[in-house]
Length: 84
Image (cartoon, rainbow, N blue to C red):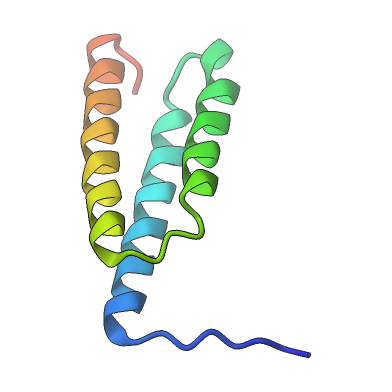
């Protein structure tokens, strides 16, 4: 049996934003020092998994916003340390 999820446009856009954030975070993790990359990737994945089943659109928007702030901080820290 194949289950097909039906998304409305708003759900589709939110999902796309979450996936974009995830990809951006993983790209940033590649810039981290070698000894920290694995743990950073694991933390990113765990954060996504922890909220995987969230269906509250307002909470999802909040989590995206929080994730973007954390990603910005990570990128600033990596920039200051000279990791490019």
